[in-house]
Image 1 (cartoon, one colour):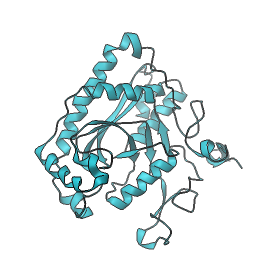
Image 2 (cartoon, one colour):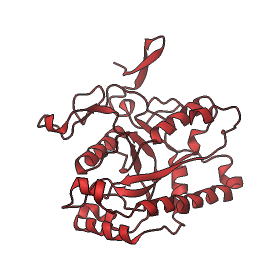
Image 3 (cartoon, helix red, strand yellow):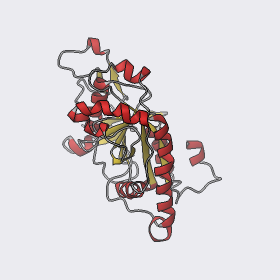
Length: 300
């Protein structure tokens, strides 16, 4: 992505980027086949990790944010890719366009999601596919199960100061956003023209009474094909909406009324997440570590 972004063969300064793919889904928020649009992408696995069998009694998970000593502490060591926030006004327009699509489903998905109806918290997971505005957690580890999903839901809320809603799991989004951010810093891309769309192919946790391993390895959830099909069915509506409103709205760009960018404020503005927004106005700064690199830290 970086190579394409920085290639002199292309002009991406007015290009809209749709980051799209399938994802695991949190049954508290959405269901198999649903189409989701994120405001935040949170790199939830960028943490210390202890085996859950060896954690202290007062820990809720084996994951502890970098530089911290407790799972609910904001990370003290900041890399910069922990959280990205994109244009919420553009996201809401994309949600509106996608809602005009007729989403696909499967009989297998209908049967499997019905198992989640017995748990009140999973009501959304038992319903038909829909278009939902909620956020994406990224991790190189393909995690599954109630404990890890709840832990990373907590991480999403923590890293976004309580405003993020964890609903989908992915691997690539924060890396893609970092490449586009670097392009924007060099005036090669417009970070306000990014849409993050994920369609739900499988549940991130089992229904009540089902083993975690059954949910991940053996169950016929029936969500893969609808998720693949709904990328196109919803995505094409977004593309058509942008093209149809190009002259009136999208050529000049959709003004972002929220902060957009990374935790460092690399594109300007003040992040509404991170140490600078909640810890006594104690913003993240960069402190030189060596001539070849920089080490992020908190101002003290």
